[in-house]
Amino acid sequence: MTMRATEVSNKLDELYRELESVRGMSESEVCSKYNADCKQDIEDIIEEEIEALKSYECDDCSEDDGMDYINLQQSQGLPVICW
Image (cartoon, rainbow, N blue to C red; front, side, top):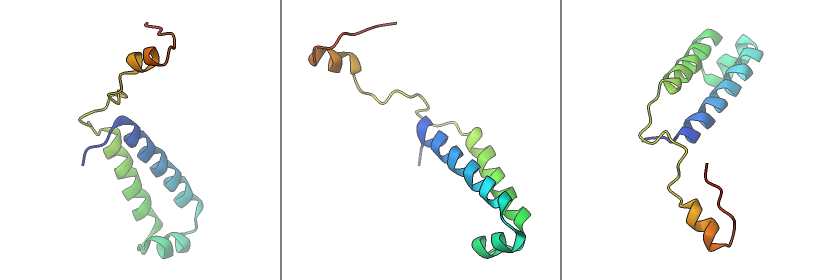
């Protein structure tokens, strides 16, 4: 499965929130929730996922979604500003 840049960004945000949540839990809460032997194991796994996503090279990491916005704007009678 390939991900777009926005999907990678959203997943990173989710992982950072989860990591902060885990860090705020007690050892027993983390072990119970994640069925783990220790809290550090879960922190390590989440951090590894974060690092993997940071280095992820997606096939389409551009924000271009393929939509022809110029023609869309023109068809609706809107002004088109080109940079």
